[in-house]
Length: 359
Image (cartoon, rainbow, N blue to C red; front, top):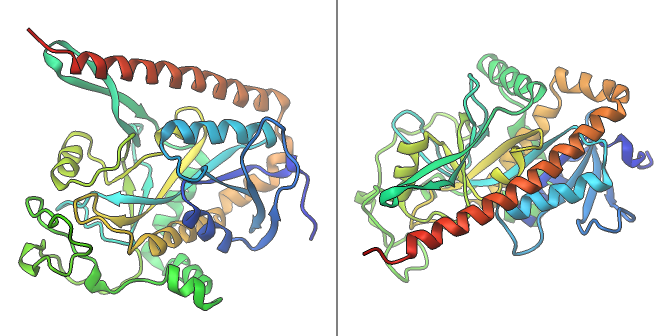
């Protein structure tokens, strides 16, 4: 099969890290390779392919550059080259925020959606500084578009009655060669250790081998080691969180199940579903051991999602999209760029005011 015209690509798959883009590529049913020609103002690198009935364009953030502003720039460039994109999937890894109500473990998948109209992506460092130096958070973004939301709920319902497909997709990907097995295989369950908040990682220690078992939170053994899914709020911000107490404070203030650095740059004005594989617990014990497996879990979930009937129907019906709808999408991106600039300026001013000496 030859590569379809660019105006027949309607799904953008955005990955912040190369390991996430590699996992996404492994999910393609057909791989058309890297796009050769694109808008001259677009500096992104794209990989094109198909998943089921969908033509998918995969893009990775520039090497070494992460955060919501960079993610917004990448997507803004993407719609220059692919002007008929209808929605996106932000697929990658994130830090888990476990609690008594949500038994989130390494390798699990968090999907940014809720059962009401509340915000599902919270930009926890976006807000206003008021008298006394108190910070009021104002950044909150609503549910993903209805087709993606419906497909997500359909998966949750189906998984109650029968086994999900994404574990098989993960297994199929890792048997291809020894290199993929080395990067994406599941670490041992003994390497999934959740430490009590007050137990910080010893300074300078390369791993957690020296962290005693008595520091760990006691959790029941799971009957199945396949990744479990959780739907809820994703907290997004500019900084990497490596502190258990900060993680807990964020949970109490936002109710988030996961933390990342890019989602807020997309969902404000781009029809997007955020899918995160949990690779650490956002504490001082954070390491990269689970990144490959978590990235693969998120990618496999996204592949199964795209196979849901409501999204398959959408792929067959996208030829009816009007030029007015495309123009409206581009106008929303322009408004988002302006809002992002205002937010950056406001945040910088707020930080400057906070650091100014008080008398």
